[in-house]
Length: 265
Image (cartoon, rainbow, N blue to C red; front, side, top):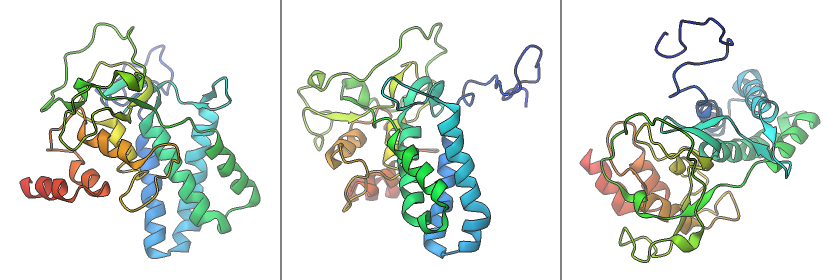
């Protein structure tokens, strides 16, 4: 408890978490909600839907809509936030935006008939205020192998923004990647100091499944090849522990890659 929440509470609000690896980490709420929606689709258990899933969906989405402010365009601005345990300071992390796109779209699609008119309108409006999925230009640091967490950064004053696409390298980092690539970004803005070995941008592929082989991408403005390039140029290519590379490769139709990774495990 002391290493996470922190037991020394003097002059700290009750919501303050000392450990920065989880201080603003909310993604698990959306993962759990999507698992519940998947369970309903597989089982048709409408008792579960009415007693557990719909109340959980209402509370989860209400949190995002009411807890965070709006930007000048009236879109949700998810801040303060973080990209998993890797980038501890971010604005509009892709993990949250992708998760909200998938869960809201699925709620409307499969729960619509069970919802009150008020809740249907609430979810439809929530979907309209989501920020766009962040993109950036591919660069050499998207393909580091066996990356280990860096030492703590003395300052978080330098934040990264997605680079324009014309800064992409002229030579592909992977023979299957396009030479001038736009890729998924970890967030709209983020502190580049990496504290763990994760690829947050690939959460848009799995677990949130915005991009799946044989299906139209859930977000119309991003073609499938952007997700493929993002996977092939991923910053961390280490494939042990909690890495989701085999599932992400299979989701993108990279059958040989998925077979290689699963066989290696």
